Image 1 (tube, rainbow, N blue to C red):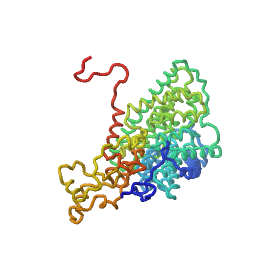
Image 2 (image 1 turned 120 degrees about the vertical axis):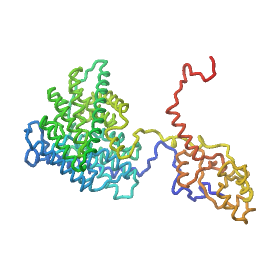
Image 3 (image 1 turned 90 degrees about the vertical axis):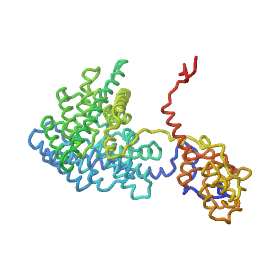
Length: 605
């Protein structure tokens, strides 16, 4: 008789596949191992952030002020000179050489590269990237590049998590968890924003929301924020408290701010890739592009020196309204121009700080016409710009709250950020992060949903009236059956008189038997008594049935009663496709259930 996955017959037909008990989640105790590793990775990400920030400050002080220090300087009083043009060009030249002869993966702003490593690289990063990425970013930003440190630290922290995971026997999914844990730890350390870092992981990097990945990432962020007072100091990065007293219709102004930021985001994203296309048409090797970008950065610095570098002091001035409109306009225009060109040139640097400055500057200007402090609208512009451009509205909302420490702004922030997100989703097919990946041929979808295969049971889709062959049928009769017109299927279940499943017989089996004349009087029960095949039960998930098909290379899975082994149904591959079709119908079919319904053809009222 055939093996029926009963306790008394322990033969495994599925290559190690086993049924799991029904429950909300698939996570097992191995998550505790990942949590322990996340503690180490979170510590590594926090210290890597300190090293990166110190490197940026060191290079900035050496290049622009001629002394060794890791205290972050300001470009407010930087004198205009020829060196202001030469320094970014030299920095771009060094980065071009590092990318060509070191690792091309240091080019760009970090997050797309981290996503790409997760999607197509098995979450494996090389030690070379872990070293060269922070070094190249420090050179780029330190020589005037208008970037932030968050993209590089996400890439560097991710590399730390990935490298650590590669020392152990781990699956690709587990390596991804530690890679993202390192990235979240790095972002947390720099901005003091553990919740936003975890949300960034969920909205951008993990491509899932499972306890298996969420818990270790959250642990790494908590570990990093615990180290932050010793590395960067305690408290919010830009402590602010707004006296928010908007009128009842103020929420509509917040939404209007979101629309403005969404349009700004769409414009900048479009311009970025148009400029990148222009670089692609240049008749020179890409190694020289960062130097050309550096030339534009230097010329922009001659117009507005504060547009150079990270610009955290600008963010602080916008939030505190310690700045005049003329300066805000100059920073907005110059920062946007040099950032777009420099980033398109393929140099190394992050996008988050520039997005905050650009969104905040426009929000501050809009705030001059809105009630309340301009700094409040600058904060909404920052969050909306971040959430809309990166397609991460929850990240943008929590990030703004955490960097200011002002919880009273939560609802206005959520309104502005979600509206900006809606605008960019409707205007652009891809974000500033995923467009770069798509141009490399890797198209991704960032919508999460419950897997219908895990939501549906075998009994919901199985064929209940199954055509079968009796176990008493002789091999000769079976061969005749398959060669006659009566045959309608390629494969049939074989059952005893009481309905107990014996096995499966296919046309290929019959052709083989026809070549052996001595088997003509042997019954199917005797012939396939040594055969083995996987079976499902009515309460198995369709996902488990699909896994059975893959593990056993079977196109049809019999469904039997758990206690008796009697055949009660059959699931074929086309039944799985029907489930997919039903899901698409749920998304596309629209009809009313209340009120008048549309008439069918030929129907009269």
